[in-house]
Every structure is written in C-alpha cells, then in structure tokens.
Amino acid sequence: MNKISIYIIIALVLGTVLAAAQPGTDGKTTRIVITLDPQAAKENAIKAVESNGGTFVRETLDKKLIFNIPSASLNNKISILTIPDAAYIEEDVLIQIPTPNVIEASDTGRIQLMPNDPLYPQQWGMPVIGANKMWDTTRGDPRVIVAVIDSGVDYTHEDLAAVNSSLGWDFVNNDADPMDDNGHGTHVAGIIAATMNNGKGVAGVAPNVTVMPVKVCNRFGSCWTSDMADGVRWAADHGARILSISLGGTLPDPLTSDATKYAVLNKGALIIAAAGNNGLEQPSYPGAYPWVLAIGSLGYNGARASYSQYGSFLDLMAPGGSSDGTAEHDIVSTYPGNRYVYMAGTSMATPHASGVAALYWSYNLSFTNKQVGTMLIKFADDLGTPGWDKYYGYGRVDAYPQDG
Image 1 (cartoon, rainbow, N blue to C red):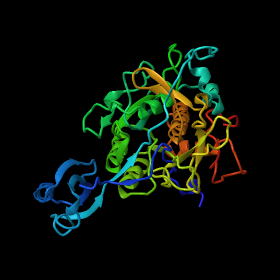
Image 2 (image 1 turned 180 degrees about the vertical axis):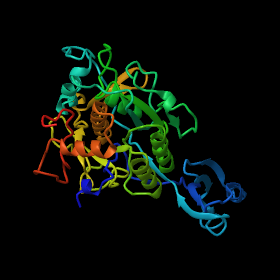
Image 3 (image 1 turned 135 degrees about the horizontal axis):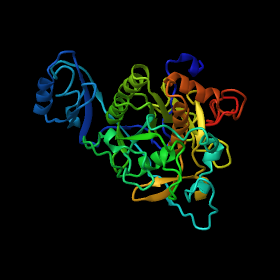
Image 4 (image 1 turned 90 degrees about the vertical axis):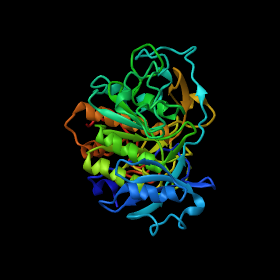
C-alpha cells in the first residue's frame, strides 16, 4: 500500500548510522521497562523489584518504570506474577551508532563562493537539493523548532547559533544539559542549521530555524529505546515541529512505536528518520513505521549509496555521502570543539531532508505536518524507475520545486 495514502501519518525513515538492535544485557544485568496497571502505586513495584536485587533507573514520560536487574532474576524472581500491579514487562533494547569514519575538513586552496562560509564550496549536497535557490525566499524561521534526537549537540560550537540548549534534555544522564560527548549529533545539527554568512565553517540547509538538542545516546554511541522514546515525547511536548532522528534498529518495539505515533497524531509533529546503513533490503525502525518518513542516502555521483538500506518502507532520498574513501565525496559539517569533519551515512541524509521540511514550514507557518510531509513527497525529484521504487522511494528531496 502506498504509505502516503495512509496518512495522518507521514512515514519517516530511521537513520543510517545505526547498527542492528542488540539485547539490553551485558550477561550480568538486564534493563527492563515495567508498565503498571492504571492507578497502581509505583512505590510498591519499585520496592518489589529492589527487594529482588533490582535498581530503579527512572520513570519515563508516559509513566513506565525502568530498572536494571540481575539477568538471572528475569522471569524468575521478577515477572508479571511477582511485581504488584505489573501489566507488562519488556526488555529495554540497546542500539548503537557505529563508530564513524571521521575526516577533518580543510578549506585550504578552496575558491570562496556565496555564502561566505569557507567550507560551503565543499557542501555539494546544498545545490543538489536546491537549498541555495530557496534561500532567496526563506532561510528558515526561528519559530520552527527542529529537534535533533541523537547524542546531544555541542551548543557552544562557533557555527551553531541556532541551537537552543534550554529547550533540550539529556535522557542519558537525566539532566538539563544535552551536551554532545560523541560527535554524531553535532554533525547532524550543523547540516540542518549551521550559521550562514558568518565567515566560519559551513552553512545549514535552514540556518535561521531553532534547533532543540535531545540527548538519547551516550558518548559511546549506545542508545536505549526507552530513552529514544522519551526523547520523542519530550520534543513533541516542548514545541518541536520536526523531529530528526538519525538512529535506528532492525526491529520495531512498542516504546518507540507508541512515542512516534503520539508525536505525529497527538502533537502534530513531522518525524524524519534514517533508512539505515546495512546496504540491504531491510527496514530500520523508527523509520519504517508508516507514520514516519524514511530517508535513504545519495552519494556524490547522485546515485543511491551502496550502504543505504532500501525496500518497501523507503520514502525519500537526500545527500548522505559516498563513503568511498574520498573525504570530499562525503558530508562536511560541524563537530565538537569548533571542528568540521566529513562523515557519511543515512544519518547525514536525514538532516538534509529535515532541513528542507523546515524551509517548507518556515515559508508558511500554518502548514500541518501532513501538508509538509505530502509536499516533500509530491515535490521530490524522481530517480530510478518512474514513480515510487524500492531503491529511491519517491525520489530526492527538493527545497525549491519549480512547479511549487
């Protein structure tokens, strides 16, 4: 079935920089999520788990309880039968951002073009999606908030004035400081909204929007699905219109399914996620949920990058880099410590699409998530077989459709 026909609900694709889902256990402890019956006293459940060797981690935004428990206790001392008022117990799932190939960027010997950001000539993806043409009409509106749900963002970076750290949250450390200690999220944020014409670094697709940093992955790139789900709820509840998720795993799960559906259907957000980097005909979640837009990756030559996952879940394509050993065939963007590096993956394609969506929404703030999602598909530049196909979806995102 054609995904756009199932709306309210716009399909967003999960980030390509993610590894396959892994079980939430290290051989000694397991992380679990307990859903209680309505009106149940959480204190009784916490006491019961702790009396069997478990440790309470936190309560999720939708009132579920997270614990670390001895692995041997699961289904033995800790189960539906032994925890008061437990309606459902599930194992939390850990996904991983693969260690990226990070290559430092240099503007030495480059010809300066407009805008005056010295690395802009190396941002080949911008003219490919027509962002440079749309900048004459809009460069974004600060009232359009784009949440980067990732490893946090280095909000002190010289080229990331668009980032408002006070809007974000850190679900890894459960505090209000979403600083990036991995690098992935900072790279994603720069693609969306790096400052333009400041004589530094790069330019973002929509440099005048506001970026909300939501940290759900730790410094090693490990991300619990419960944290991702809460990151989605946080962003939707705090005014984000677009949720950019360059993360994913191979299996669906009830936590991210419920959270993404809540953000789209209840809060009117648009979710854009990566298609995955395994190069296989294989879905990646949350991108493969029908209410999320899944984004595949184009290489420097304009064709689907070999690592980009494909299949019936795929919606759109955007520049993500070739990963062919030539740095300038990849995507240059911001990195912690006022640095600029090249990276490649559907993780880089996703923020290109998120930036285009932000330009559309900035052009008309009255648009709905359904309208913006529909326009992304309608105005896409068809690639591959005419019409939708499993390798290119509906085609490459276009920030400046000639017939728009």
